[in-house]
Amino acid sequence: MDGHTVAYSRSVITELMVPSYANFGGKVHGGTLMSLMDKLAYVCASKHAGNYCVTVSVDNVQFLRPVEVGEVVSLMGSVNYVGKKSLVVGIKGVAENLQDGVSKHTNTCYFTMVAKGTDGDTAEVPPLILESEDDVRRFCSALQRRRIREEGLAFMNEYKGKFQLDEGSRALLATERCILGMPQA
Ligand SMILES: CC(C)(COP(=O)(O)OP(=O)(O)OC[C@H]1O[C@@H](n2cnc3c(N)ncnc32)[C@H](O)[C@@H]1OP(=O)(O)O)[C@@H](O)C(=O)NCCC(=O)NCCS
Image 1 (cartoon, rainbow, N blue to C red):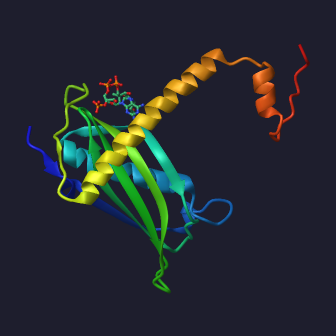
Image 2: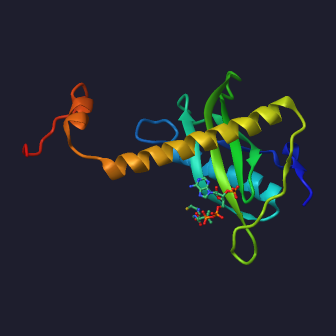
Image 3: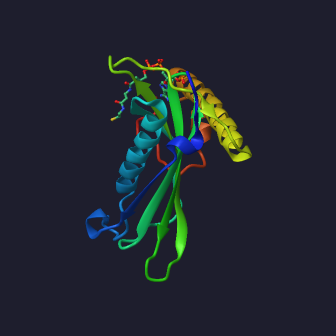
């Protein structure tokens, strides 16, 4: 299977933030940005894979600054990592105020997408050709995020399975802003 460069599937979505995108506070709704980022992740992943792709998880979603109605948001996406059947698309969002020309970095996140063949089964994706040190750094960073996520999931599954409202969990909550409202055993 021939590989593709990062540049082959790099994509940008640019959209004007119209009043219907606003939340009750008058800023752009986070869900609107998430929806745009999901579309962009689909474009990058499907272009690289040459197949239909589905979103399977989203990591490190960050809303760094509010986005105002009237600003123009540009989302830049590129394939950071390719596994056997999955791909990670890294996305950076920038909002520009058209009146003063000032741009701000507003979002970062990483979408894991899985390729599917025409039969509906998961499908292998072509390797990623890394042409720069930045490409290599992003690929290695995605590997580290995957390791941390898998370790975190294993830890939380064990924690949930063994959880008891015992002295240990009471001590954990002692300095937290919560009140245990259930009757003492
Ligand atoms: C995506 C999906 C087909 C994966 O199914 P699966 O049985 O786990 O598939 P596989 O075990 O073959 O794993 C395929 C790849 O997905 C990765 N993967 C599976 N679950 C994952 C998760 N939660 N997070 C990150 N990667 C995941 C695996 O690591 C594997 O990667 P690799 O091939 O690069 O090593 C299945 O979870 C699914 O259909 N999910 C719903 C997707 C969807 O509908 N998205 C739209 C949301 S509205």
